[in-house]
Image (cartoon, rainbow, N blue to C red; front, side, top):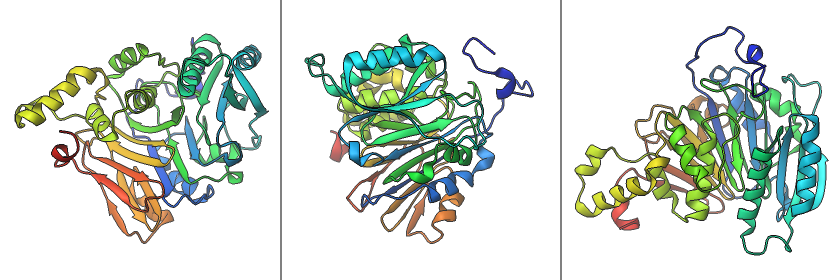
Length: 385
């Protein structure tokens, strides 16, 4: 065991210094809002088994809890005996707890040393959360738990959605959490191949905060700068994985700073300086201002992400497209995947399929019955200047 309580021999049995490989990401959304089950998402992510190694997988499901659609659903992982008692005391002090239960699991599933995971449907206590938005109040308490209670990790904290993740292959995690019993209008899936960080339950993906979820394939060399910048705004990375900063950055930029997704994409994956120097003055000044204000949230290194919030599924790859990303649509169904083969497995005859360029944002929006494509160039004068 190391200092984080992670079994090193289990996570890296051959003592390799580093293994270079790519994670698997897959997202499936019904743009009409129809809820569907686990069969196609699990079938698709399992088709990319060679992209993971059994040391992490997970799912985020939106539209999951319609009977509690206005309540915050906290999924909390407990890694030691005292963590639950301390966490529930904090929850009772700061929230009205409407329901608390251990998440049902199948003990026959092939997973490694699963910790207990509970879910709580809560509302902030109005007498305490007076001068702060409910989302900021929940965020503050999530960070209190993750940083202040040893052995407790809030892995999901949004409304009408939930994250289920752990150590295993995707199909193992789906079986363990009995995902055949759930439905949602959007599923975000991840199969992990850890490189720089340990394969453990808390470090599995997707990562979530409030309404935002991210599944990431890649490696962020900018993690240190990203993490330190986010700490200034009250976001603390506690799960020993560089991907965690992605979801916090989205919440900060979109929810708190109220920036459009088009701008956030250009913060994460901006043009190179030589490209900015060659732009017209108005455009150049805009990109220079972005780099000056948000340079610490540039996501440097190879990455491809599927991000989600209520009603939207988003795809974005780094500016050099060093990690693969494929997008497709069939009727009302919208797909994003590491590989086209995973999409074709569940939808052989597609209406449209394409591979976005580096830095090109793609967004599927609920109930629009169409796909919004934002090209790499050409939108700036119309939308931002």
